[in-house]
Image (tube, rainbow, N blue to C red; front, side, top):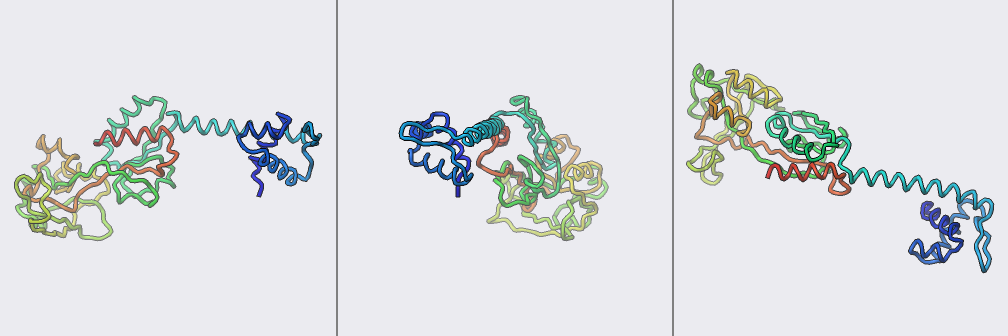
Length: 309
């Protein structure tokens, strides 16, 4: 099968130089390759493009007209390739990001601000969600999401953080309902959680020991599984946090998300002697490919990875 682009390119070089040998030298191929391209093009078109003699090569009338058209097409193709290459190298245009909404509001704004300070010609188009998302179907360049939100298996996934969750409640709620002493006591409390495919929700506790930082020890600590019928479920950790602040019950939230409230005393940690070992929130950076990544995307990826290290 004829490679029309290569054949047209070889033909124009012969037409411009008046020599098969010179055209071959310009293209960095053998004379026989150029001859084969031109012959294939003539057979494809069903016309003679050159009058050949032992001394020179002259375009036929049809060949001259065809050469003019080829020059226009090749010039347009070169311009298209140049625009595409330039676009991939320049840090301009729109960067479409999808991010976990409840995580974004307390961690990502400084990252976005830093990126736009470095690359002011890029417009950030951010979509916040708590649902599963298909990066390719949604037209997103990059995602910052929990791994359960990823629908496509063809994405590159880079873990950014792994935040463990803690049960918290407002002092007003605990004053009214009492402070649970063991995980089993949660059955007598109002619980705030995320909607799940199955109900009730299950929190898996492990008795913490000194010096563990709230993460427990898998080898020596006993585990206790508690099934809970949540009094409020909502698919936003921000709303869960607000509900806890509003004394609506006990919520299981990432420690980083409630660190300021715990320090201020507006929220209190519940069951501090236990770790909830199935409440980790892993947030990852996802993007479609490792190859031919536009510079605006690559710069964001590198900045995000460094930001969370």
